Amino acid sequence: MTRIFSGIQPSGELHIGNYLGAVANWVELQHRYESFFCIVDYHALTGPYEPDDLRRRVREMAVSLLAAGIDPAACTLFVQSRVPEHTELAWIFNTVTPLGELERQTQYKDKASRQESVMAGLLNYPVLQAADILLYHADLVPVGEDQVQHLELSREISRRWNSKFNVEYFEEPTPLLTKTRRIMGLDGQAKMSKSLGNTIGLLESSESIWQKLRPAVTDPARVRRDDPGTPEVCNIYRLHEAFSTPETVEHVATQCRTAGWGCIECKKVLHESMNRTLEPIRERAADLQANPARVDEALDAGAERAGEVARATMAETKQHMGLL
Ligand code: SF4
Image (cartoon, rainbow, N blue to C red):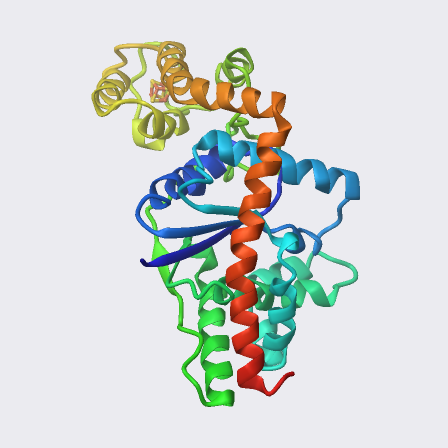
């Protein structure tokens, strides 16, 4: 069966941007492919963090993923640091990765330019990412366009390692470019992001979501109630596309263009559509929060399964490299 690997940073509770951009896709993919989904806590160490906060964020991410529909019976969900082979393989890959390739990575240049003192972990981040993927011999990696450069480096690392040891052991993973929805924040200015404070949490209450939707930015052309609008420029319309039925989306477009309703009516319909999707997720999350042992069980089983595959890969890798 074709295997996929994908990782997500332990940013705590998911927001609807992460959900629509990646996790809703994973929920579908887990039934089509042998799937490994990893909460990448080692990657999170390359930024500033507090240990207690990191622990909390990993758990909240696990709860969010399970509540969103990631099913431990259908896939392998695990925390990266529970499988030490990730860093072991990353060290090996460091020995076949040219420094120049790492320095050319756009994300590195971008982040390094904003830091006073740049740690080696930030530079080597894509090497660990290559290890994450190749440890599981993943055939496909679901990625957004901003991750394609890192994946190309993983392909390069697999070629270099194979060539150095004269064996076709690591297959080059292929990007599974999925139709990702770029969800703008409620300010309509930038991508939805926790650091910008413009998000809606996946597990937020219905009331709290409405408090955020009500003042959210819409088409600036709709100043008065009878001004017609252009749905395609409005973030609320984009959210309708993600949460409402196709019939409702069509109705929204017509009502907007003809000024058939005001933005508040439009937002009320969106709020109902969001509740239909999010209420079952909130209920599952509440259930998991009340039964933390179920989260532990899922993560233990995931670490066990991932560890089996990772240990086998490391044993074979070491054998090819002349390590005892
Ligand atoms: S009617 Fe809806 S789609 Fe149109 S501008 Fe207002 S909120 Fe946006």
